[in-house]
Image (cartoon, rainbow over all chains, first blue to last red; front, side):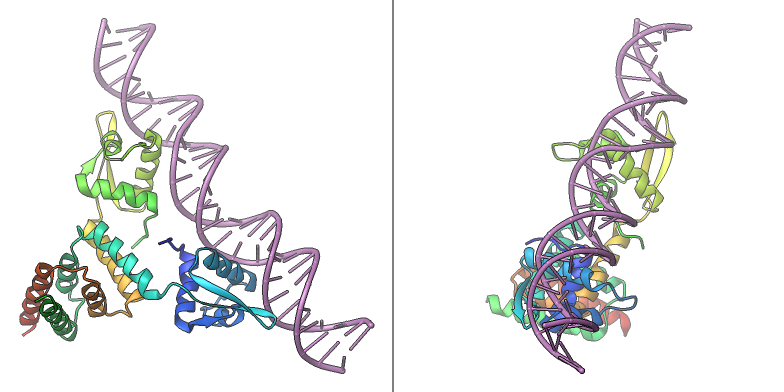
Length: 123
Length: 123
DNA sequence: ATCTTATTACTAAAACTTTAGTAGATTAAT
DNA sequence: ATTAATCTACTAAAGTTTTAGTAATAAGAT
């Protein structure tokens, strides 16, 4: 999996959001001050070259659509984070979040449910 | 919290590991081909400027020691990941890991324990 | 058909990151 | 005290990323 740079990631988040978009529409999703048209176009082309989006001619412009789903990249990034910052242990990360009160009761209960469901799957 | 660049992060991981170190010792932790002495020294100084390490003269050289604990930066990175890739929901991330069979039974049980402990804390 | 507007491909300037050299200072050895 | 080795501060080249301009092209309006 190729890495995205900051700028590429920002544009890619918009593509993931919209599923598909042309340059003009993508720009409207940027906070002010909005980047130049050609800036976004350049990044879009980089995303295509890296295989993250498809580029299809449509009318006088191009439509860029998701090629690598957000989930794929999320998984890649999450895996790297756990490896580099939590000794490869997910529960270590969970414990970190829990300690910091970053998790609501609801989220904790949801986590228990998920964990139990997975444990039963294995049996 | 300031962001670390790739090179800075690599050096910082070594400092976190060793707690404190001079440039020469840090270099031994690099895989071959090892970077030049001055390269590591430059990055160390950048880390000091960013407030991640302390720099103390000791004998003819300097000792760099952890100033921002790994946990602080880990938390920052994990928070950003959850925000940007899991809709701000940690349990969504947990579920993602669980589905992918990236979690062992042991880890899942550990997670349940952690969650239960936290839930009881709140009562 | 000409003019205007939108889009793209190509290019490049500006900013940032990485890597390391050089000169000078400090220490250690003889 | 001269020499050798090590370290730092400063500087800068090389590489990468970000941003956007310019020229060419295509579409739409009158």
